[in-house]
Image (cartoon, rainbow, N blue to C red):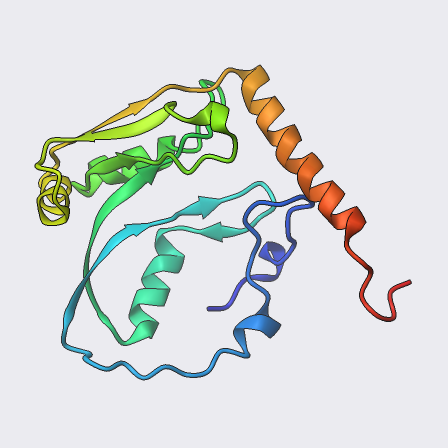
Length: 178
C-alpha cells in the first residue's frame, strides 16, 4: 500500500496514524494458500482523519485487488461511539452502507468507561455465533447511537491527548536525539 505524501504526517497525539513505509517494507511476503476460497470480511474500518490520513473505499479496493485473496463481500460497516451532533464521523459510513445495501453495527470501542452504552447494536438472533452473523448479514441489526455532547467529546479528546503527551514525555529519547 502506498500512501500519498500529504497523508504521511501522523497526528500529534495518539489516534490512527498512516503506516510508515519503512515498517511496511519489513513485512515478509505472504503466499495466498487458497486463492479461490471465498472470504467474507467481517467489517472494514474506514478512516478519513484531519491529519490527512485516509483509508476508505478506494484504498480498501486497492488492498483487496493486490492481496490475491478472493474477498467476495464485506458484512457490515461500523458506526463508532465517538461523535457529536455537529461532528459526526459516521455520516459518510451510514450513507455508503445504505447505498450499497450493507447493514450497520454499533461499535462500543470505548476509551473511557463513561462512554459505555452510548453506541451499541441489538441483533435479532439466538446467542450463537452463526446465528448472530446470519442476522447481521440479513440486516436484522439495529444501531442505537447517542451523540456525545461537545463538552463530553472535548473532555475525552483532552484525556486521550494528555495520556499520550505524558507517555511521550516519560519515554526515553531515541539514541542520537538528545
